[in-house]
Image (cartoon, rainbow, N blue to C red; front, top):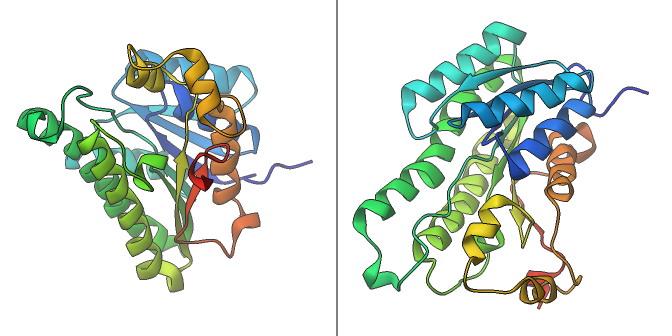
Length: 253
């Protein structure tokens, strides 16, 4: 049977590992032709190899989402290769500086995180949307976080950036709802990824992390990826402007 994204073209940024890699594989499983992108070329090339090993079709485009020229070229390559862009998963992001309170946060670290986590999502939206307007619609998913729904200590820039992603998502969803473009965000909880390993290093034990979420375990990248695939599909045709927690009940408490 055909997948939910058969004959669609999908773009994933931050595709070299974790949720980005899992999403690339699952979108490809659902039939999408894939454009995978990251600044980590070796990791993204490995993702592409896994897609092709499983019978999928895709290309890798190196891009830094904080640079306008890179993002323009990324969208241009997607369209020149496959003729259109139906789905975009704006997933690239960093955790940033993870020590000290807000007044101790280094300005240069703040600027870098904002450039990637906020400006990067905005630039992707800025150049994906015109293509989708031209072709009559599309679906976009942004990676926010449960950190975009609640606060946390000693992660001020990350918290601020993910709240901004939620806000951008809602604003874009309202602006383009009548143009056939749906824009949503996923808000992962405690997911077993390299970023999470860095975030909790020296702070939490494995037992702490497993018990933090009411479900009693860490989430997997694939569980977030399945949500992304659904939001990109026609099965979610009435869904736009949401920030969907994928967090094992963490934000329900």
